[in-house]
Length: 212
Image (cartoon, rainbow, N blue to C red):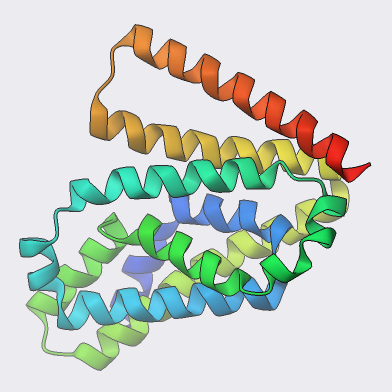
């Protein structure tokens, strides 16, 4: 059961938004901070899937999670635009980075297809420990791959490019979550994208000036 759960969760997680989230966070936080936050979030998610899966599906409106996830992604997008010199000055704020990583990962993964897969397995099989460890190891393995990819990219790409790519990843997923919840018209989408782009440019220029 462990191997079946591991493979199912691992494959379901590949190319998922949480992998891109970890990829983007790999620039902002130290390795151990990301792993700690990710491990805590995955532990909570796996426990919820097994012991509270039915309650979670019945009483927690998954659609209500989308705007919360969207706002979180957008905030991380603006945060990703900060140069490293500015982040160094704000070192104390990053000391609790594991909590930011945990919250971001938890909200992004809650109600996602990988968690729903674990909930289904828990409902069909009386093997909670095997499913817990299969789910935990599957999620960790898939996202550690994303973390390794992010660390490798950091060695070969300039900080400016990484900032732009990281911010773009957060903005895309944040905006997509908003669009799924509010169902805007094409004109509203165009106006939204224009405002977001201008806001990101102005914020980036302001952060560059602060860093000097």
